[in-house]
Amino acid sequence: MKLVFAGTPEFAAVSLEALLAARHEVTLVLTQPDRPSGRGLKAQPPAVKRLALARGLALLQPASPKDPAAVDAIAATRPAAMVVAAYGRILPPSLLTLPARGCINVHASLLPRWRGAAPIQRALLAGDATTGITIMQMDEGLDTGPILLQEAIPILPDDTAGTLHDKLAALGAKLLIEALATHPVPRAQDAMAATQAPRIAKAEAEINWRKPAAEIERQVRAFDPVPGAQTRMGGVPLKVWRGRIERGASAAPGTVCAAGPDGIVVACGVDALRITELQRAGGKRLACGAFLSGFKLAPGACLGPDHG
Image 1: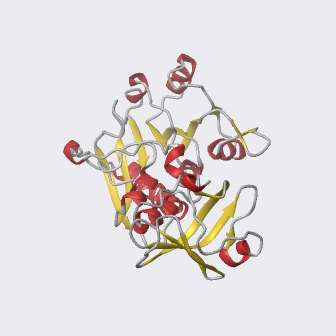
Image 2: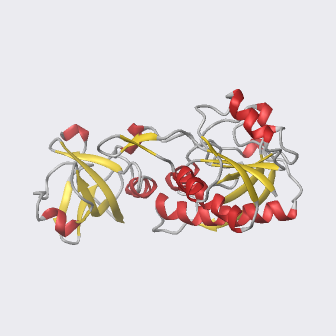
Image 3: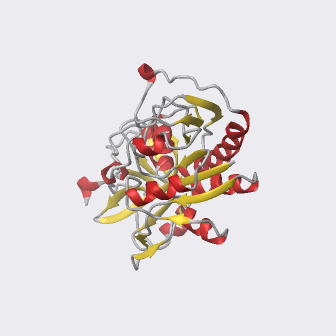
């Protein structure tokens, strides 16, 4: 099938690779412009661009898909459908109706739950037991179009945003190929059941030790690998990468109850969190024992912005 593909990060690159493996004719790829990244803030190409260049595909990086030149370029290829996966831009109405089969989106949630930019993190933060992939026919709303295919997977107790991303990227690619081959009948979403998944704000990464340990443990997993759940000790920024709930805590929230090779136990609003992997600014992610060999943290110390 002759297709135009729009996507940006690794999640989208997995779907593009699947389309090529299935011998679909990808006539044009749209992705976002290169962005500064890393310590040197050098412009870095997104994953989809790297794949497109490696496979010799025609590529556009418009600042907006509303750019008339981009719309004209897409129209010139006469695609049967346009596939969108984590593109990060809203398509204009002129594009939604341009291909014969319209625009098909790969979304990392079980719509109508978690419409928006951060469905994986929001599912983890909420403590959802399951998530999944929705292949949908796009309309002018934000993830509001009719559903073509869905498949659920469980969220495991040790899943992070990183592990779920990889599982869902693979599942999304599989369902996309199936949807293109089988022409499923669209079914409308239940708007009354919709929840929103807005982008993660920087402030959400800060750990509030007054919250229950169960919420903080989910926060740690939801923000791994980006941006990392954050706290402070004596003004020193720390990132918490792994922890588990410890039942019962009598100290004030944020107080270190124990610190040793098997973990740093921090009192929370309910229960405590045993931190087993963390990182200081400019350092590496370290298991607790290795971290404490170079960073003094004794029982009675307090974590959090109130103690920085």
